Image (cartoon, rainbow, N blue to C red; front, top):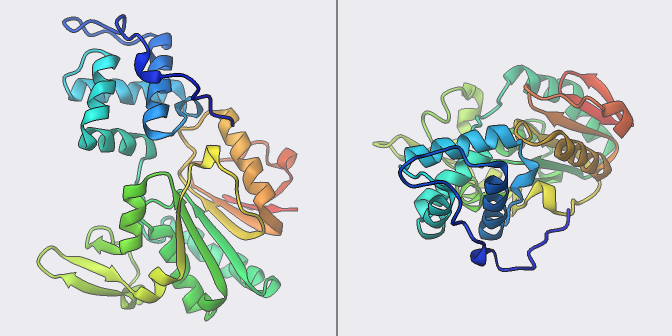
Length: 285
């Protein structure tokens, strides 16, 4: 998707966007202009997100911050890094946990990883939209359990640089680890007993390559054995989803597996070229 940043967004006239003493929902045109300016600010194309859901969230943030028009809200985002962080968090929805949907990770371990390991001398895995790293480190634990971690290329990407930094640091709270099976606690050491913070092992951190990536506006690597994109696309438009799933398909090896979230479906998976092996697992023909 080609970006069109060939004019000065800061010269756009926002004078008609709402009134200070009488809040009203911004019009479609007002939101379109706001999205264009925000794209220039954070390099993320908001037109790929479902309009109604995103606009409701933006209106909620405006109300929370006592702002009644989009121009004022945009200016707040420009000057206040905390408010910009709040806005980005609203877009990226960084909610995750280790071994999320445990039964599906058990299925992955039992039914898919053995075949992937058997058929590839150097396994290549990508966690797309990795958030705080819980997913990619869950995979690293599984591969270490299977004795092949040193033969696996683990890649994790996210649009949010601050979240990526947290993932790379590998420090988690007791709450973030509360659902972790006891057999995996050996990978963590206490770094702050008062605040109950735990550091994941350097072995696992060093096994992962982290990258900042906008899924809808980047070129993907090829020859992946396994791609996970779970609970990431639920706010994307149907057109954006279709394009993304096709890009994942093209990035997989023949026989490679795409693992999606429990709230997601690929309605046109046959047209893309996938076989549905079981719920949330799609294999490239």
